Image (cartoon, rainbow, N blue to C red; front, side, top):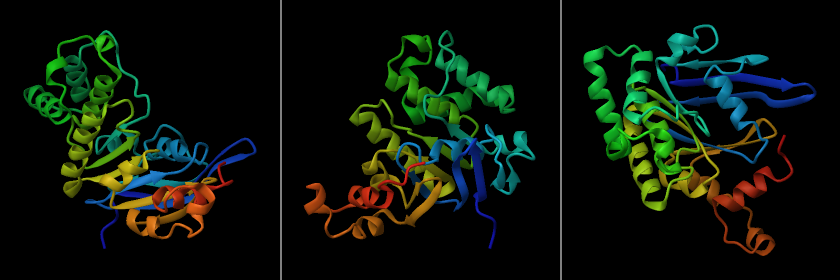
Length: 253
């Protein structure tokens, strides 16, 4: 069997006495959309920073399409797109100029850049603001500009941290439709607090707490595994949220 598009093996990261990520292993294959869930402090952001090369692990490895992210960072970064939470943008630039700049950083030749910008803008529905300064845009438009930047080079792997944060319901619907459209030819790891998003677009859900994986299955299977006493205890119906609460209660790092 070929190596997964995303292969995390034994990742560990400590900050002083705190072990934020504790021997975490995870594989994502092309065609999968994997929801990466956990309470605040569970180790999600630390894991994504190690996976994308922004933070060195104390132990373990992270590979993108067979490339070790820390041994060959530039080669790995050419193969994935990353949308961090609160993605930094250049406020004085226009989305069109920013996307062309990022396309150039990814090595797209000049004759390909205009087409890449147009395609990323179309996919994220930002055509109407391509020539406006980014600092004049709404939070929703800025988030979609950041998503377009992650898509600009046609990556085979997408790592998305809260991709619909700040979007209105219509915009969320459009982004989720885009994720579903990309899924058959892309490996997607999606970190989110929105459990309805996981149910809408993810083929798997991985739940972490205290830096360790505590569950890995389809969203439907995890929802069905919610404790039977959840309605009486929480006053809410059983489902993915009830499972999440039971699996992560008291286990954040």
